[in-house]
Length: 260
Image (cartoon, rainbow, N blue to C red):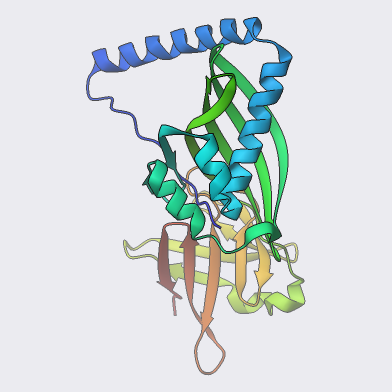
């Protein structure tokens, strides 16, 4: 199962609408805070337990549990941007093949009560399927009916993770990659060697380390707030000379030829 990064879009077509939405958000937070103070610890524990059980059932295709613990008007949004109603999420869950081999380790979890019978749960999760490990953030909306919690809305977001590093020897001879690479709008990307490490130099001269993750493959050492994980792949010609640099973003690929 894979959840990718997703984001919701709000309609902010007018200033008045934006102000109204902001006021509503403040009131909702205040109401949630007040309601949280009025609800006991046992309700929080039950809401968290239901959240964990529901997402686990979704991940392994436990349709019997999902049918019994999903509200009729539930909407699920995954990071791919795909949204499902109750029938759709059941069909999506049924398509997962990892089954009980999926291991889920829960991190921080917080519960906010909009009212005693409506809870919003924010959860962090590390999921392992075979050799692959991914991190996610879940938002789960619960409503209490006849004394038990049902999921009435859910959204998943994948948390980008940096790749494992390899040795410089595995990456290749660093001097092979040093040079100027040309962008489509007459820009220049400079790759240099500084203190034994490969760096990308911005127009102001600031170096950004490129961490080796494979032969001719490098990654920025931190997740970009605007672009996510940024990787660079160097391409060689038949003679072994590096002739281009490709920048790999989560949503795009750009290739820049090396200057003569």
